[in-house]
Amino acid sequence: MSYLVLYLLTAVIFLALDVVMLRMVMAPLFERHVPDLLAPEAKLIPAAVFYLFYVAGLVYLVSAPALKTGGPVLIAAAIIGAMAYGTYEFTNLATLKGWHPVMVATDLTWGTCLTAFSCWAGLTLTRLFTA
View (cartoon, one colour):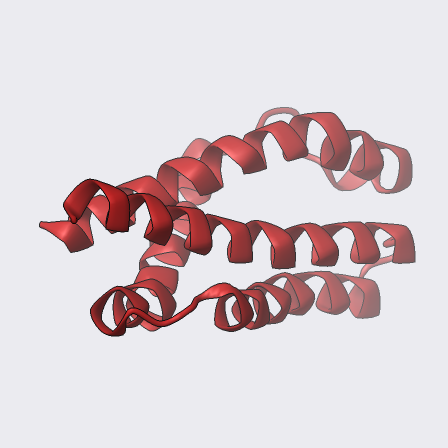
């Protein structure tokens, strides 16, 4: 039961924060640099698949082991966030015309921090609610 709580809390935190960042920072940044690449509307199913699987991977690889052992999560989660967001951003920088280094730096920093914070907050709240 505590693993389900851990997953749900981490997912809600991750999604809520990412929606704010996407709307307020990333969308305007992408519209400024690569407007022709943007779809008129976001496709919700692929986005949902990403969020569900990404958070599941974080819980499996980082948060659940920390819940079991009492260990920390920030560094491991930050590394995974940097790897995931870095893969996306540096691949796009290498292959897409108009991809800007500011987009890379912004999204890489955000993904690293978002991943680390979401894992930490989800784990901390789970420990409080299931203690």
